[in-house]
Amino acid sequence: MSDFIFIDRFKREEIEGLFELTDDIKSRPDLFASKCRGKILATLFYEPSTRTRLSFESAMLRLGGSVLGFADAKVSSAAKGETIADTARMVSNYADLIVIRHPLAGAAQVMADYSEVPVINGGDDSNQHPTQTLLDLYTISRCKGRIEGLNVGICGDLRYGRAPHSLALGLAMFGGKIINIAPQGLEMPRHVIERLRILYGADVETVRDLKGVISDLDVLYVNRLQKERLPEDMDYEEIKDSYAITPNSIRSSKPDMIIMHPLPRVNELSYELDGDSRAIYFEQSRNGLFIRMALILALTGKAHLELNPVERERIELEVKCGNPRCVTDHEPYLHPTYEILSSEGEEKFCVYCGYRL
Ligand code: NCD
Image (cartoon, rainbow, N blue to C red):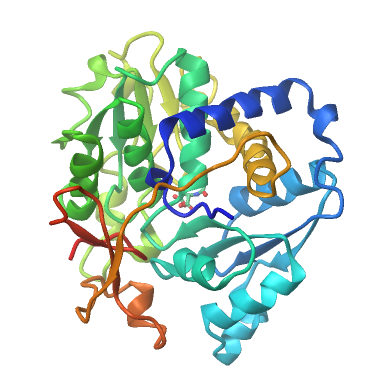
C-alpha cells in the first residue's frame, strides 16, 4: 500500500507514468467511468478548500466510486478531542482511500501511519501540498513540452505557502531551474532549501523583485499571501500589495512564458491578466481533476501503475521537532521521528513536518 504525502518520496519515472495515465483519462474519460465502482473515498478536510476537495470528490464520482467525509472539523469528533490516529483507525473501516487536509504540519503522515488504507495529503499547514504539485508539473510539461531546463519563477509568500514547497521539490526532481521571488521575511524556509540541495543538488536563487528576472522566465508561478498563517507582527495590509502581478509587471516577459497560480487568488494576480494568452491558471486547475483521477486509480490498484515510495531510514530520537506547528507537538502519543535523506546520514528531517533536526 502506498500513501502520497511528500512528492519527493516518489521517483520521476513514476510521476511521469501518472502523467501518461492522466493523458489517457483526459482523452477518453468514458473508458474510466466505472473503474472504481464499489470503492469509497473519504475526504477529511479540517481546513477550508474548494478545488482540492471538490476535484477529489468529482474525480472519484467520475470513476464510478462514492465519497463521504466532512468539510469542517467542527462537525467531526476532532471537536470532541479525538486524535488523528483514532480517526485514521475509524475511517479505514468506512473507506478505501483517504484524503486529508489539516492545519498541523505532519498530520497527513500521522493519518498514513495509523490508517489501514492509502492516505493522500491534501495540504498540511505550510508543509506540503503534493497533489497540487502533480497538477502543476503536469500542466508545465504539457504546455511547454518539458520541465527540464526551464526557468521557473516562484513568486509570493514562499514561507507560509505549502504549494511552493512541494512545487520546488517537484521541479528540482524534474531538472527545472528555480528562481524564488519573495518579499523580505517570506522567503522559502531553510529546511526546504536544504531538502532541495540534499535530494536533488538544486541550487535556488532568491531575488526580491520580479523586474530583474522576468525576461528570463519560462514559467511565472504566483502564490497568495497566506493571511491565515501570518504571525501577528507581520502586517498583512502592508505586504499584500507589494508583489501584485499586473500586465505592466510582465511587460518584458518572453511571449510564450506561462503564468500559473494554485488559486484562490486575492489581489496578487490582476484580473486584467485573465484574457492574456500567457495566463493558464484556469486550465491548470482543470488538470487537477484528471491528475487526481489518475492518482486514485494508482493508489486503489485500478491502473497498471504502482507508486512505490522511496525507502528511507527512519529513526526515533528523544529530540523534539523544532517546528511549533508540527503535529508531534500537539498529539501526545507521537514520538519525534526523523528520516535520513542522504547516504552520508548526517541530515535528519522530521518525518512528519519536514523540519531539519
Ligand atoms: C492552495 C492551498 O490550499 O495550499 N490552494 C489549493 O489547494 N489550490 C493554495 C492557497 O491556498 O494559497
